[in-house]
Image (cartoon, rainbow, N blue to C red; front, side):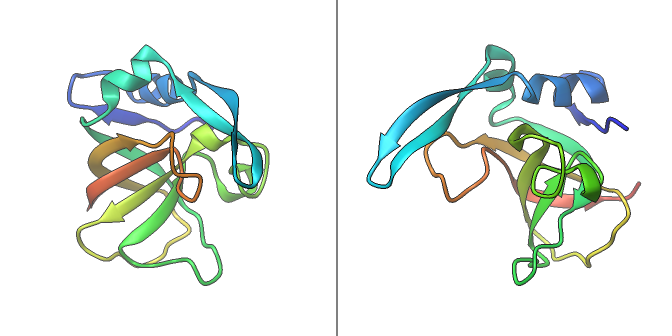
Amino acid sequence: MFLGMVYSQGANAQGVWKNLSEVSYKISKDNFGELYVPVFSDNIKKLEGKVVEADGYIIPFEGMFKPNHIILSSLPLAECFFCGSGGPETVMEVMLTNPIKYTSKRVKVKGKLTLNANDPEKLMYILKDAQLIDN
């Protein structure tokens, strides 16, 4: 199942997740050794700073679920990046303005997309000032 995202310029839901998958990687080095750094396509760069809507599943990391800071996967749990076959482009951090309760059902959120290529402690896609949208 392919879940998607819609942004204010009117792209279809599947097209935006497809755009987010247009990421490549270059090898860089830091004090700990080599690491892969994302290189965002022009289509992805056009989304930065825009308000987008994302459908997906909350990833329940032990000790990491915070009602106002979640990890959202475009894929169901068994297929997500951390648990199955998906890549890092299938997940995003979501910083919510209001806390939500954990659910295993699909949720929809809306927030401002930020791209992260510099902080290896964070995911490469982050939604800020996000809100839960009723499905």
